Image 1 (cartoon, rainbow, N blue to C red):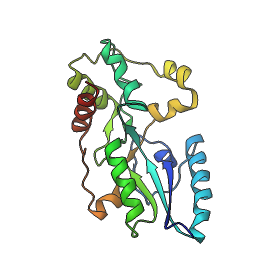
Image 2 (cartoon, rainbow, N blue to C red):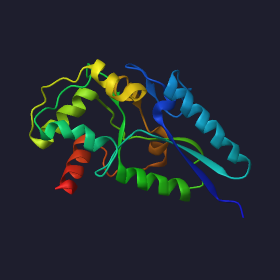
Image 3 (tube, helix red, strand yellow):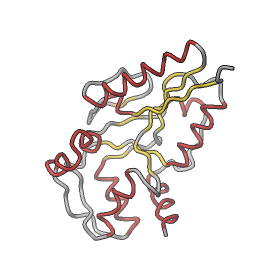
Length: 197
C-alpha cells in the first residue's frame, strides 16, 4: 500500500543568501554550497511524486530548548558575554519547535499541501535584533561582538547560515490560515526560557 504523503525535511538554505531579497516558496534556488545541497536533496525527494503527494518542508532556524541553535545562541548571555554576531544586519528566519510540530502534522493531514512549504515564523528579524531580544529577556548585556573570522574558524561552511542569512516568509502557511503559536520572537524566547527554568 502506498503512503498518503511523503514529507521531506529540507531547509531555507535552498534560496541562498541575501541582505535585501525576500523569499517565498515561489523563489528560485540560490547559489552556493547550501543551496546546491538542498536543491539536490529536494530533487531526489520529488521522485516520490510518481506515487504520492510530496511536501518539501523548508525549515528555518528551529528554536527549541534541548538542542539545535537556541541553547548555543543563549550560552554567551549566561556569562554576560553576548553581543552582535558578524555585522548584525543579516536576517534570521526562525520558527519555534512547537510550530514546526503543528505544521508538519498539518502537512500530513491536509491534502491541499503539496510541493515547497516554508517553515518560518511570519516575522524574521535581523541578527542584532535577535541578540538584543535574548539580552532583554534574560536581563543581560548585549555588548561583545563576535567577529566573522572567529565564526568562520569555528563553524567552517556552516558559518554562512549565521553570517549571511536570508529573509524568508511562510506565504503558503498564511494562505492556509495557519495561526502561529509563537508569531513573535519575544514570545518564542520567553516560552523557551520559561521551560528551561
